[in-house]
Amino acid sequence: MTIIIFQRFLVLSLTLAAACLTVAGQERNLCADEQPYEYQTRLIGGYRIVFETDGKEFKSLYLYRGSLRKAELSGVSCGMPHKNLGYVGVDFRNYFVLVQSFGAGNPHWIQLIRKSDGKNRVKAYSAWIDADVGRGLLMYSERKVPHLGDKFAILNVRTFRTEQYRFPDDIFGEPEVLNRIQDVIVNRSTVVVKYRVGRQVRIKRYRRHR
Image (tube, one colour):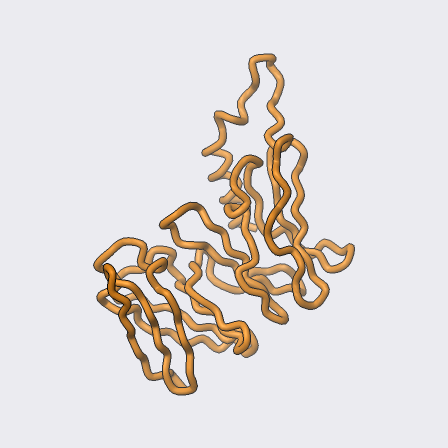
């Protein structure tokens, strides 16, 4: 809930001018021209995401199972792109990843939502790297802007066992660190990270923590 309140404060500040009184002295209805939500809404296990507006100012995503509302997932001002509000990055059996994107070059914030109660199970403002749906693995950074010496996490969403590995040192020579990671491949004994440095694609291998 703290994340949702912060998001609303942030986007409301950005759109304050648009939300001011009109020349006629009446509040402008920011939601009047809101477009339909274009992302995935059906989830494994009979769950679904419902897009709603308050009819005046804010739009939100809610988690439902059948007709039962489980939780509010996110909220932003009407008029902001739907990708700011969030979309399903990956759908696991008992969890799904809600990704929020705020423009080119910015890290993609994630929440790992437990479907049974709508609660986030990762640190606030963690950032997307990759996922392996078949093996139930989520790769992410606990810092939205990692620094030299930081580690990324590989979380098994079935057992909630986490492995951490240091980012390759040479990935920090350019901006947009997380966006330059192309792939994370987890094998029985190794973790392989493919990433870009300039025009080169480089590979970093790690021995898995067992």
